[in-house]
Structure formats: structure tokens, C-alpha cells
Image 1 (cartoon, rainbow, N blue to C red):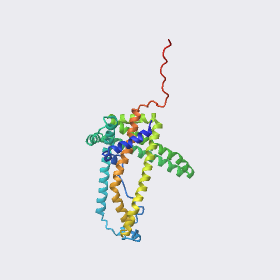
Image 2: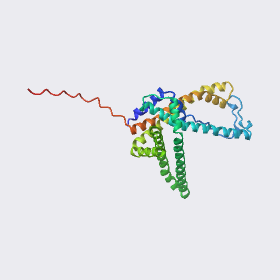
Image 3: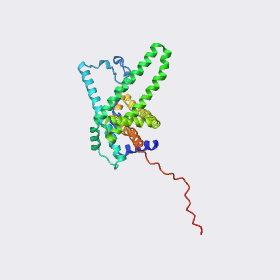
Image 4: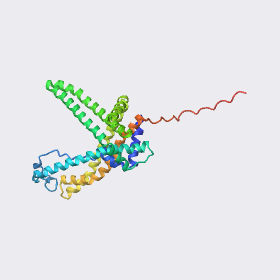
Length: 309
């Protein structure tokens, strides 16, 4: 398995076909974001000490109707993102399949049509993975809680079983679901057949599946750290200008995030496409391994000796 080739080709395809970033943004989940506020005691937050207006969120009049409307808006947004996610997964797989194994060309319309055709199978696979994961998580938590109830030492020992089991399950479900998605789109098979093929590819190539999972996680961690560093470097001058202008800390951060949002979406589209392509190219290598190049460092074969006279 040529993992270096998979990584380089994944990023090359993402960079060369920039329209794929639309699918990659939603297929990889890069379009979903949230802002967490660590302290929810709104009435005690006074940010005026940072050189700007007071942000006393306790004084903001939120009527019950407004909160309901806000909640429904977020639910609708989540539903739209979920639909786009389920459409973009098969669309991106179809596009890369045409690029890698076809004539090298693809169209947005044809790939989007493939996303529509495979939507319900991809959605069904996602539901199965969700409910199975919910059961596994509840079982693992139940084992740990029961062990702690019996004795603290037994509870600590149970973590040595529960934590590795949870990590192994994450590895298994990530790879099996990813391979099943590729099988459904590339081979256009039923959900059951795709799961059977994915499970076979997983259990017969455990080491390769472990390596691609670790590579995927490692690159994602590296990209996340780089993104946080870049965001911090970007926000520092924005915050400084905002504080000097009397906007306050919170307002400066919000303005900086809003300005950075278009840039982050573009970067998220590119990195999301490249990361999603890793498993697609990995699937191709599993089912159709690239031919091994003949060694070029061997000494030349001497010509046959002329026949004796």
C-alpha cells in the first residue's frame, strides 16, 4: 500500500479541481461550526474593562417567542446541513471516481445527480452507524459506571478496557462506513452488499486500515493546530484595532470571526476535499492495487555471448 502516493494524490486532485471544494466543504463536515461560551451567567458579564462598551448580556430582551424562533432556525439550518452532507458524500466520491478511474473529467451536474441517486442509501448507512454507535457508547458507559459503583479500584481498571474498546470501535466504524460509502457509489450496489464488501476489506486488511485511519487522524490534528495558530495570529491585530477603537473584546472577536469566515470556508473546502479523498483513493488501492513499478537500480543485463566457432 503506497500511502505516500495516496496522500499526495489526494491533495493534488483537491487543488487541481477546485469546484470539488463545494462538495468537500459539506462532505467532510467543515461547514458545521459553533461558538461555545464557557460562562453562561450572562448577567454578570461586563466587558467594559477591556476598553470599550459594556456587554451586559443580561440586559438583552429575549422574549420566549424569539427564543423559539431562534431554536427553530438552528434546527432548520442543521437539517439543511445534514441534507447537503448526505448529498455531497456520494457526489464527491463519484467525481473522484471519474477523475481517477474514468477519463479524468467530471461535471458538477453529473456528480450532484449521483449524490441525489445515492442519497437514501447514504442516509440509511448513516442512521445505522448512529444507532449502533449510540448502543455501543451506552454499553461502555454502563460498564464503567457499574464498575465504579462496585468499587473505585474496579472502576479505574474498567477504564483500561472501556477506553481502548471505544477507540477500537471508532476505528472500525469509521473505516467500514467510509469503505461502504465508496462501494455503494463506485459499484452502485445495495446497502447490504456494500457493508459486506466493506467488512471484508476491513478484516482482511487490518494493518492497512489501521494505518490510513491513523494518517487521517494525524493530518486532521495537524490541520486543526495550524488553523488555531493562524486564527490566533489573525485575531490579535483585529482585537487590538477593535480595543483601540472602543469596541470591546467580545465585539472585536466577533467582527474578526465574521471577516475570517469566507476565508475559513475556502480553506475548509480544500482541506475537506483532500481529507475525504484519502479514503476514496485508499478504497481504490484496496480493490484495484496500482501496479508495482519495476526496479530501475538493477545492473544492466549483459548481452548474450556470441556462439563459439
